[in-house]
Image (tube, one colour):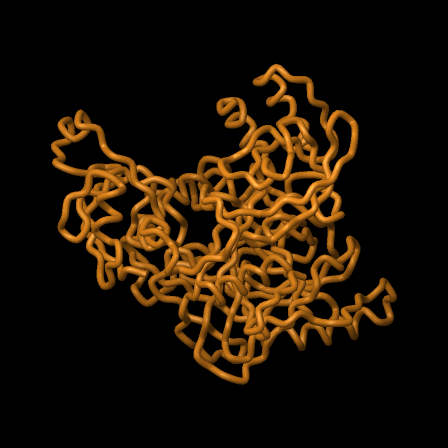
Length: 511
């Protein structure tokens, strides 16, 4: 099965590229919340959308542009020149070829390190002010790896921002600058948008500040595989708004608005064979983005509920064919999500779902593919109850599922509730004695499931690097790591070995 899916992966991601930060600085150039303190992140009421009346369109675009441009900012990402970004470029080289003259990702990175001045950003993207006191929403990939984030308003005033939190699973981040009385955008209910509706994309593409482009909503609920294919998201949620408003590198994190100037999405990616606009852009829906930033602001972490099932998207012909071949089954392509198994402490299994059931609705919302399911469940928190409609042996049934977190809990958590490995953003496997002998090591653990933007990632550790010591103490198991850092506060020193056998000592402050 794994080999078959690997063969299918390029088909899922070829031509899909993050519409992103301008990496390397080109030539140096409706989710309602019950949380009372979330009033900063408001949702527009009485939202209406312009029709195709050409007499009204021009005025509507001007109004929306005047509302939106002052609330969209440039975000400059500054990184240490020794930050390891080779793994990111390797992935893009594999699928798309090297867009920097065929020199290869690592050589390009080395050249950038030699040439880029310390005061030049490593990348630039966009962000949207969502409260008058300086909260800003953007993409996770816009801020990833930064040791300093600079925010520049449309009036050219500059601030150093604090990164409040990020979520690789939705590619959303929340920043804060210290200012009051700022222009900001309201969240619209993105569930109400319609295909064919006029929209504007506002951002800072290719170093061009305050750029406004217009188009229509081309499709809703798009899953393009970009978050999972880049390996940054453990449980990606992809249900993008697709638009033909022109979006280019640097637009990432910017605003997709309706003709009232209300925020309906955060521009995140483009579909292209060149890395530049070719007709399709993708935005995270406002309802999902709003839920993520509310979680980060209130709890410090994202609250994520899970059904607790493994599944097969019946709308994907190739995946269905591969599954049938692997499992010797005869499922037919169509609409819905086939339940193929259950995780530990599964709320769905507790509610009576069985392997072979086909999920067709969540809370009376039709589930035609995995993007629909991802959005319907991903916007919920542990403890939330959802009504699941499913088909079993051709008969429709309904049950109520209580969503759980990945540890089986049904209550919200804060940073204080996290384990050591959750706080620092990695898990660790022990090294075999044979490996230690062969490589002359007296201790060591292998880093696994390193979270994008985590403390471990920020110091340059990626999956399969070997951590030898923490705070000067040898580590041989995950329990050793947890024992050293449990209830620890202050600076943490980590000694580790990279893929080439080079030894580094780096540090971070314990979150």
